[in-house]
Length: 224
Image (cartoon, rainbow, N blue to C red; front, side, top):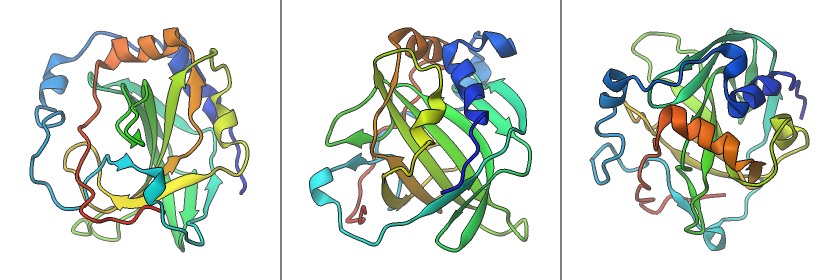
């Protein structure tokens, strides 16, 4: 794996309180209200919805789905969307997996975590969202999302360490966890649980509130 992660220091600054980028912490009620179905379980959006409860006893052995990272320091903006803090990126950073190349689009947080591991929820989850550029406007976009779960622990000054070595993932096919819940996502959920201080996690939660979607039915999907 090749990677370049000074960019992750930007995430560390966001987790540390967003002061460096002067992100307002006032909740945008209009934006927040647009997520009305975000928290409601049981809505019918398809058969491979995300997030899910990953059961380690059900993991299928496979050759694995490798990913190669080519991240650059090309941040475009940091946004408080009311329901999450989002970092947008310029073109140039990519992720390659299973013969496809994806562009890094944005990163955002969820508090608490959306995915569960063996029924356990965690205080925070980071999503690194990558997308295959569509050839036509009518094409269904295909995404690759890297998810990292956080636990309470020491202050995380350099979040880059969670991808500084070859990581181990749970992999499954699923959907976006926000509207329009598109079912064309390759999920890579980091097995290692990352530490962040209670203050850092509370700061993110103060900005965005609880914005984790309910666990979805796996409908027999394989996790490897």
